[in-house]
Length: 181
Image (cartoon, rainbow, N blue to C red; front, side, top):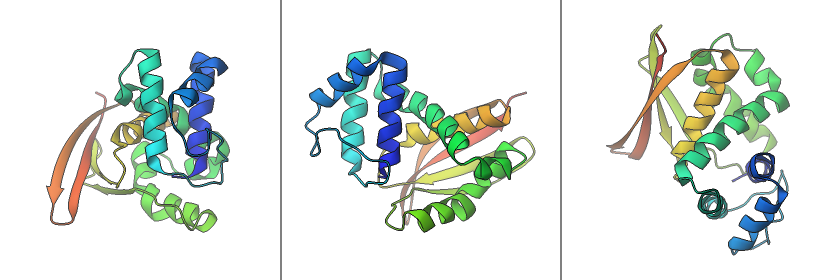
């Protein structure tokens, strides 16, 4: 995973629970680098799992809820840091359709070693769409948070359902996204 996700997570923890919480969760984890992350570095996803689990324990919440909140935060940060990816789109659905074929293409130019999840959209209508998330990392709650953060950015309230599926090419999570009535 790219280091920007780690640095943003630690900033998220500091903003919501203070710098002492950041120190505490780093102390709780046996991290190979002692919790020193750079935004351009690459780190194993199990380190993110350890950090989010430690934070969830200390904050008294479930890890999926931590990832969901962090995903919303991360989307806001991406919109601030990379406004061109958001401003080129006129709607949430148009933005979500652009993730794999446009945004991830640009990310790979900057970070050729990035191991990005894939997002495949289908069944789009005016009211809804399906988005299939495939990743070797179990971070579907983070993905859902990013989707909800994009919904916030575009001012388009949505409902999101998540279901797990198996196919000949492996398992994936399908997000069924419907515009709020």
